[in-house]
Amino acid sequence: MTETSTTIPATDSAAGATPAAGSPTRIDEIADGIFRISTLVPEVGPDGFTFNQFLVVADEPLLFHTGPRGMFPLVAEAVASVIPVESLRWISFGHVESDECGAMNMWLAAAPRSQVVYGALGCDISLNDMCDRPPRALQEGEVLDLGGKRVRQISTPHVPHGWEAQVLFEEVTGTLLCGDIFSQVGRCDPVTTHDLVDVAVATEAMFHQTSLAPHTPAVLRSLGDLRPTTLAVMHGASYRGDGHAALYALADRYEAMLTAPTPSLAG
Ligand SMILES: [Fe+2]
Ligand SMILES: [Fe+2]
Image (cartoon, helix red, strand yellow):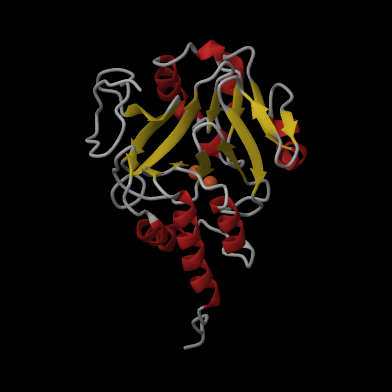
């Protein structure tokens, strides 16, 4: 992994490249060949909020999350510090929202061989229409061989939100690209080994972003059964450690919230 300067202290992180002096965006290699591109937006939340994209370096490089359109120059600069932007082959994300895929068509224009790759449901309900070039639809559990890395598509409807929600599991490094699951507010290290469950539950209490449905804990446990060793988190620090235990613990907390008595709205 590369060792260069960073713009935010990283106590237990892998260091990475910084796109340019003064840039609000940093890039760090959080697993072998998997780079986290992170921009802190100070105006969101009580202490800022990070928007993170993940570049999977392989023979056919993949970007997970495009960032919103306004963030495209920053993210492109960060990608260019690792690979030529035009060499990007695949674009994917966790669900259809502006921070996940707002700049999708800008990436398709910047990388002429690139293509959005997504679960079949998301293609059917949104992406076949929204993408400037037709997306590639993956069947449930299908593995896309990137050449040196492999990502498995897993649909997670409404977890954490969005009918078309999905995650990708990179099998070579054991990295779960888990999107908005384990979101945290504020400044953070690129990757941490500290327990994220409490801070994720506190963030959930602030934003109410998760669809707390009866199936939510079971979906989280099924992701835990993949036994990821890195959780690549879209907002906040990524996690390195026992992903099975972390996802089961988060499922337990959500299950307790689901079964807690609902406060009466009547005075
Ligand atoms: Fe989201
Ligand atoms: Fe998000």
